[in-house]
Amino acid sequence: QVQLVESGGGLVQPGGSLRLSCGASVSIFSIYNMGWYRQAPGKQRELVAAIASGGSTNYADSVKGRFTISRDHAKNTVYLQMNSLEPEDTAVYYCNAHGVVAGTLYNYWGQGTQVTVSS
Image 1 (cartoon, rainbow, N blue to C red):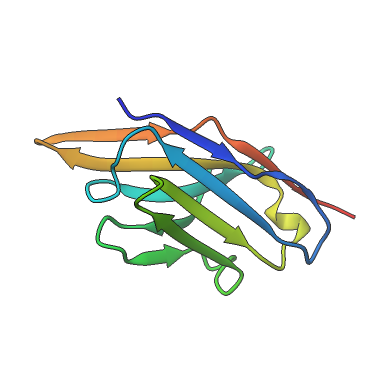
Image 2 (image 1 turned 120 degrees about the vertical axis):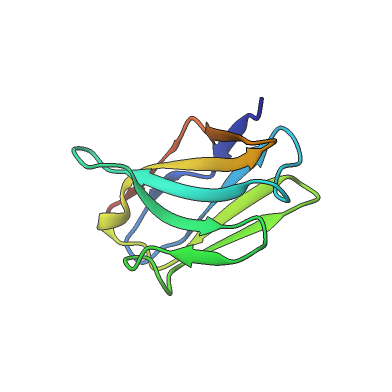
């Protein structure tokens, strides 16, 4: 069982920055793909950024050039650096880990952290 704990959310003004962290209870980055998702009120959960076990990254078009996903193997932590934040970025942000181990698909979610962009 893998536990994911997010932190770093909060209230920030438009144009500001936040860094979200997602700590994993065990070392999983070499096996699992990691991602940050978000869900705004009344909307579906959407992928924001992802980093594969091999290190490749991909981003939603809406955040390209503003957000950066990274990971620290020693700390079992994935980060989401968010710059030039816009009110449209307001949402609950969730950390996700998924991968196939011994033929079984595993999928884990954190509890979410609120990000509010407002003046």
